[in-house]
Length: 69
Image (tube, rainbow, N blue to C red; front, side, top):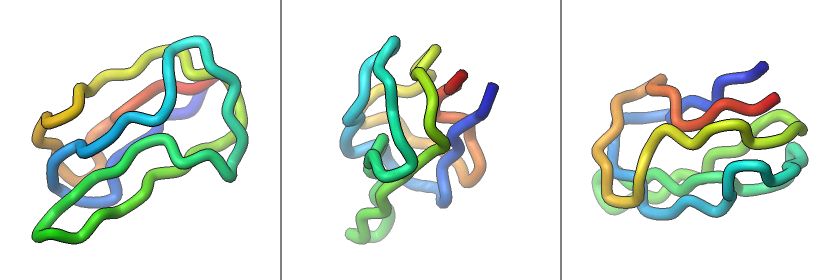
């Protein structure tokens, strides 16, 4: 099990995966924006077990966004 975390504090702009979806290391999972800069979030290959945030939600640096098995 792997936790996908936010690389910075900001707002979740996009969630590009769904629970149950198979992902690879090249898949852009989330977009987090801070100070008009967008940062793509990637993860390890696996299946998305749970998404813990919503679009528009404020997140902290290293906050868990999703769980991947």
